[in-house]
Structures are given as structure tokens and as C-alpha cells.
Length: 354
Image (cartoon, rainbow, N blue to C red; front, side, top):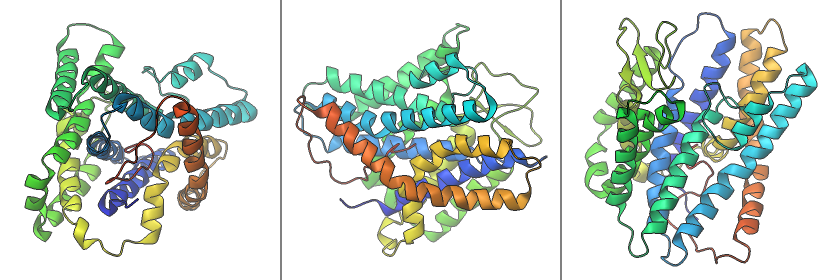
């Protein structure tokens, strides 16, 4: 199965950015918007989900979609969560049962799940569940515009409801619209992607993306969001910007210009491709990485550099485990239910977004 090289490259960039932002927590007075990697992941997810739906046979489509998506994401997440919780209990004696249960249920909570980056997987599962429901109600040909229109309407409705409820805020946060943007890019790819193929636009998109990273954050200690990851704050400006505008648009610009260079990426760097493959493991292993660093005082810059490369190396090595867990889970979930179709035209890497 051929892989989309540009998307593998973007996965590698996204997971390294998220890794860097978590490592930076151990360096005083270091602030940058590396969490934008999550927005990049969501764009990729929307694009890949639309592609996977497009390439599925109509028979048992909803069930196949659910089996494919959840087998790739959920079991491995459970495994890594159990490992982290067990390690935390062994080293510190701490165990938050409520957080652990909510993490396994992918239910949004005001604090982070057991694995810190797991908050974004709550959004992933929410998107998967919604798309599964849309496939259930569409027995004939899939109407992609109905899918994405209904999803956008749901998010917009939740955003405008005068209800002080954390789950409603989770559904209504603008970061969810980033999935829709990736989905729409797929639907219009033949029309719009070629328009972003120039080297000039690529340079502008990279500069804008880097500037966004260097001069914005997704939190402000003096501002309380209903959903804490809703707003982006640019340095020097106190007015919060909806995340889909502050980080989603620059990410989409970069996504389009990199995607437009697909045909030029004939000899991709093998290491970058491996990191792209293992990006889900890179994402999940960070909870364990942060636990181990928290036990070491003080944390030197050199230790953080070693941790960066060790995390990437360990993730590449663990990709085989990730892949085998997904394959076994898919076999178990689909046994006796449906015949799995062959999906073509997209990478099957887990967390098609992550």
C-alpha cells in the first residue's frame, strides 16, 4: 500500500512539535506554540478520514469504518495508558482512579487524561463516532458535504448554546472545525491543491507557520476559557483568538503547500518516514517520558536533548508493537462480523491524525 509522502512528512513535523512543547515544560521561561502540532494532526485526520470513506465498499461500510478506526487507535492507547499509570504508581504511589476511568472512556475532563496528550484523542474519537453515525444513516452513496455540514452545524450549535457545561464546551470548541477543514481539502483537492504548488507559497507558509509557533500560545494564566484549549494568544495581544483561526488556518496553509509538493517528494528521507509511521507512538510515549523526567532533578538541557532523540528512537522501535496491536485488534473486532475491504489510496497509519 503506497503512502502519501507529504502527509508522512507532516506527521513527523507534528509529533516532533508536540514532543518539543512537552520537553520545554522543564526549561524555565521557555514559551512557544509547539502544541500547534495537534492542529496539524487534526487536518491530516479530516483529510484521511474522507479518503478512507471514499474508498470503502458500500456493504457494511459503517461497521468497517468503525472497526478500522477504533482498532487503530483505542487498544494501543489503552495499553500505553495502563503502562503509564502502572509506572506512575510504582514510582510515586499516585493513582487517580476517576481520571483513569475517564481516560479509558475518552470522556473530556477539565484536567488532562492519564496520558497528557490524550485530550486530543478525545476529539479524535468524537469525530470518529460522528462519522460512524453519519455512515449508519446513509445506506446508499455517501454524501460527503452532508457529513461535514452536519458536523460543522453540531459544533457551531454547541458553541452558541448558553450552557455552562464542560462537555458542551468540548463539542463546541473551534479546534473541532479543523477536522472539517481537512475533510474539505480532500473533497476539493483536485481544484485547490495545484494552486498551492509554487515555491513562493511554500516559503510563505513555512515562515507563517514558524512565526505562529514563536509568537503565540494556547494558554494565558490571566484568562479562563470555558474549554481551556479553545483560544490562542499572540504575544502582546490580550484578546483571545479562536483556535481554528489562530492555529488552524496557518496549519491548513502549510498542509496545502506541502501536499502540493507530493509529486516532487520522490526520494523521501527514510528517517522522516519512520518517524511519520511511528508518530502515534511518539505521541503516546510522552506521558512516560514526562514522568521519568519529573523524577530527575535538576533537568539539564543536555538531558532534554538526549530525551528527545531517545523518545524518537524508542518510538520507531516500538512501531512494530503498535502495528501488531492494531492488526490483532482489527482481527478480533471484525471476526464473524464483516469482511474487511481493501482500502487504497491512503496511509493506514494510526491516528490518521493523531
